Structure formats: C-alpha cells, structure tokens
Image (cartoon, rainbow, N blue to C red):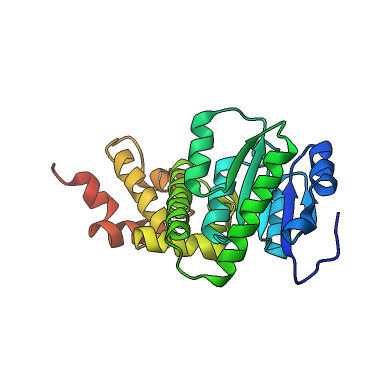
Length: 256
C-alpha cells in the first residue's frame, strides 16, 4: 500500500500483520475529521521501520505481537529516535505489566483487540492533538522524560546484547539492528550513557572475560584471545595492555 501524501495533513502509519485490522483502520476511521491520512501500511516490524524512516509519520498504530519484532524494544527505539511520533498500541497481548511498561516508554494509548470504534477514534483524536501541539512547542518536559526512559531502555538492551555476543564478530550495525535504531543514534546514546564508543565498550567486555579465563593456567593466551572475540593475539595483547597497564602474561602471573 502506497498512497499520495498531502502536505497539510498529519501522517498516520499502520503496522499490523492482520489484514482485516489494517483494512478496518484504513477504511473505517474518519481520518480527515482529525486532519489525518494513512500514508502507508506494513505487516511486520522490519518493513514498518523502513516506512517510518521514509515518511517520518506523526502517528502510528502498532501491533506488538508480530514476526521479526520485539514490541517493547521497537517502542523504545521509536520514542528515543523519533520522540515526536505518537504511538497507539493495538494488540491482543493481554498483560498489564507489559502495558504499563509500554505506557512508561511514552505510548499514547494501549488498546486491546477487539477495540470498538469509539476507543480507536479517541486514540486518533488524542494523538492528533499531541502531534499538532508538538509541532508548535519545544522542550516539553513529559516528552523529554519519555525520550530519556526509552533511551535508557535501548542502552540497557544494547549492553546486554554485547555481553551475550562479545565472542562473535560483532559490529555496531548488528547491535543497532537488534535495538531497531540507526547506527548513528545508537552510537550517540552509548557515548552519552557510558562515556565510551562502541569499540571501547566491546573491548572492555572482552578483556573482562579474558581476565576470568586467565585464572585457568591450562588455557593458552592465544586461545583465550580467540575465545573472547579477538581475531589475532597481537591485537588482543595491545588492547589488554592499554586497558590493564600490564600484559596478559603479567596479569596471569601477578600475585593476588
């Protein structure tokens, strides 16, 4: 679905893998009543993110239980990188704690399927009002708070992913893909929250893991370097000495 976009209307995007829901929202909601129009739809999170980057919509109806998408991470990514986009969750996932976490991240409404037209129109009206207000106001305290919560959520997920996959050939692009944000935005968030860039964080995790392995005298330093993700021992040795001030061999032999 790809529609002509009017510049004077608020742009809405629908991301849901149930065709009947997409069709119903697209055709049954009186969008023009709220100065809105549906610019496009997607049936999975990956395509949905591409459409968000293409249109930068004012509002999104989003199902959080779809293929190729972790709902909370997707919400956090949108609130962190596109904090001015209004989001309504429309889902069959009935979990109060999950709903509360989504609302804390900044979603406008959390609606359970099947929702009646009154609930859906109220969500559209609320998002349209907030979107119009955000276009004419700067530094909204509530918006900044949600953005901060979402950014912290993204950083925690990124650090957790690094800690789980440090031994692999891990790139910034891999972590950005898993957290649904751009490489540039993730790099900015990591630096802001930790004071380090991606390579420094990854090397720090790898060296910490190596220090634990060095306690086993049966393991060769070259094997340890490989186990924690370094492609060659020379690079490992250089990074280890830079971070610890001594060589890996000296670290192994020093007395506690």
